[in-house]
Image 1 (tube, rainbow over the protein chains, first blue to last red):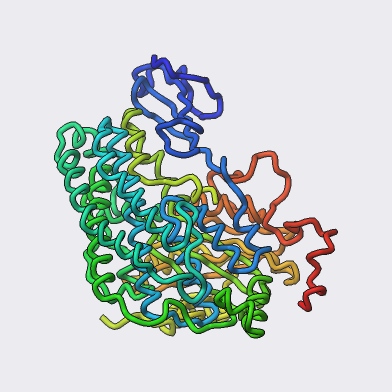
Image 2: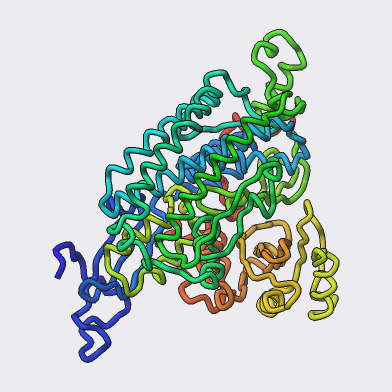
Length: 411
Length: 169
């Protein structure tokens, strides 16, 4: 047996000594995770193996559960943005914007076009960063390290653009209710143009190395496949669902933040296997670049935030000189903004699927109930079904291609 | 095809389940929400799934909620359904008393409901009858309470620097 076979867990529920059964060998138990380098996050899977073949898997999640939904019930709305950063930390700006859109819907704030376009640019940059991580790491998991280096430098570049806009790289806390905290600076615009010019080259190099590579194709085709029916039944969204052939994209079905102004395609796969998921993400990166290009070309003039003094922090220099600004500043910072009673659901197309916010407000300073619809939490359930009958190495690439992110799954 | 409107959904539900079973009808930012009895949840989900026009075949989310002051209806579940073909969303709500928070499971219809129901059980203690594996999911197994219920305050209640009265709230 494999050298890494660890414990014989009695709770897997299969009779391992069964003779004459469907299994070739005695069954053994293999503990994959929780802190295994190939799981890219804290996930435990207790695999029951028949030799090299996976017979059953039992998942344990919750290792980095931080009770965000409970914490949110005690925090003023604007302090919850920092919690959303820490969900899908590969694409924090999308989470931030999703939360802002939710609260803006509740408060009824109209966001100016320029701010909406800047948000679209930042969300698409975040999608690029997310897909770069997922796809290049998938290549690494199948043994191709070099391609990863061609594109990873562009993720670093995207983080520099974040820094220009909000001062942070990973946990961005970007934007405010009503718009952005600052306009696109000269440096940011320059950096976005550099990205639009440079990333396609890196991406082409990466695709040339990996996409039609015999080894990569053999490792990913027909691996971890799921049908469209099962994917929908399991609540799949995002690239994983589209790889199975369902063209559900929140951006095109329920456009938010002016996505209806942009022209882009929604790529779909046919088989729902690891290779299709990879291809869908690759194509989505090209589409993201297209959206960013359009947004930069047509960037409207005007203010980068709404004129909503009750909710949008006044400029700091005003706070020192202007009585009204001081009052608003104090009220916002102390969380005294009045929220109407109501229920809101807002979803955005996150890096890995439909990221939803269900907010129940009782008119208080904090949400009465806030439920995050985390795509990863919902579709990760399908993992045992997807890997049954495959080998351990296939399970690793399947998990990698699903883009499950522990921070989001466990909130 | 004409877009499915909320009135059609209400009519279809009331025709099938009777007007007494579909109440608390409201709309919030375009999303229709209805309340129903706990017993109606499974037939209603199946009806909405199978109906050739409505086609609510995607379970977006399932959220537990606690209203300590609503006597006899303290614990609730909100099912977020989405009809992808019509692009219409719908919330089905149901409430049960905290002494017997029993809901039927919908894992028979939606595989995705498995962990969602475990999450609601973990945080609110809602029992989903017939669930294949109703154990805690995010919290530790030996926890003996359901932390999202409102009786568990997040911060130390004896703190004086955060009393609402001091801030005129």
